[in-house]
Image: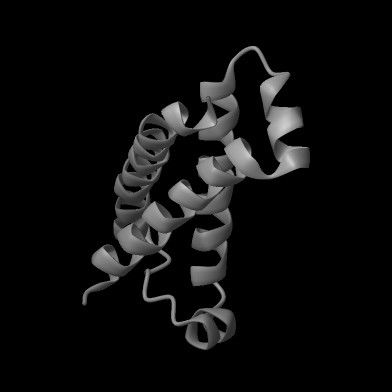
Length: 103
């Protein structure tokens, strides 16, 4: 598995977990429900998590300990932008698949 695929899988999983937390974890659910623009809040969390992931990739000791294979350069940044798109898409798909379960 190459670094791009690994980053995509990790961040897609995070997108699903974030959306499930927004829908089912009581404190997050109440906090998230009070925001008028939920999409921007969710996207903000996605970008913040991706930024932390990229920052961890830029620290060689942490990257090797955590198994992060993303490079800390322009190519790694481009890969991360692609992964943010996948992260946001997976989060929205989780929302669409679970929104009827809330009723």
